[in-house]
Image 1 (cartoon, rainbow, N blue to C red):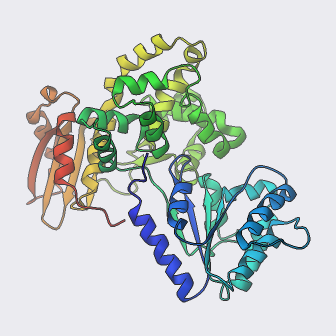
Image 2 (image 1 turned 180 degrees about the vertical axis):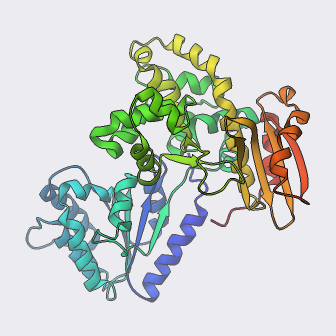
Length: 449
């Protein structure tokens, strides 16, 4: 699959590279969930520049240094005299090299040094403070364990706090990019885009795996996921166990419940029989797996809130794979596919709402976009968007099947919230899968963030 839709990130990296030439060394951190394309982005940026790529394996520091030293010698085209036992010693050589030549140094899976030798971070900090204004190297640290990379570079108690000149958080492909990819393969339809988004969430590696196998439709994607030795079956576990550590069991239980619609803290606690406030806070703020959602227009301190899983694939994995792991391990794949087909229409509704909200966000027209409900989950409104500049408020009812949309019912549900937007022009709309392409065209103004 060709390289898609990272022009903004490449522009940022190239600007930083120019700054290294004009001034002094820079550190950039690239993070984001696994399979998102961090390494591919870094290599694409560096492909037309002198660069050295080092991958941090899970092994003893001496063995890592032996491996890195070979790459260093190949890069400078000469042998290094002596041995190197600590990464910091090699890092100093690389910074010194940057005083003589401008180049890019990419260190992948950098967070692994926390387990290999935690003192590496303080050693790097001391070396960087010494050489930063003499070297012209652009150091790019890549890490896929979000919580650790955040701790290393953004926790003020850590030695590398404040040393990164830029932190890039790489996100999944937008719906417009999924559309572009499907069009390139001649398989674009609104339904194919939606179910690809629902299951993959726009994660590049999942896109690649599906397209390599010629799977573009809902049926074919589900067939690829639910089969013996499927990459996707253990993927959720692989993504999150390192993040959560030994307490992964309680985190997995919480995420399974959220994926099945138990989205309030009280619901989760009543089922698990324990307080989960601390776990939910860490899932939101430390691990970046869930997001707290409040209705549009409520006060900041309102306790009327729900939790949702940010990543579409993780959400799908907990709802249909983790929840049914016994069936899957017993290889009853025909049965599990029937379960998915039965429950997918109910599950898909909120994802279609999310898709339209993401498409509308792309236009930058609205100051607020979200959903609305009142206590007890009454008067639920799928999408509300507010444009304070033009004094316009937009309401949408979202259904997989457009025939089920009842506009009069939608208008009745908006009466209370409209009291807060007196004098605003009101727009009502019904949205279904058949409206995806139209909404993409209407909102196809590139984001600036």
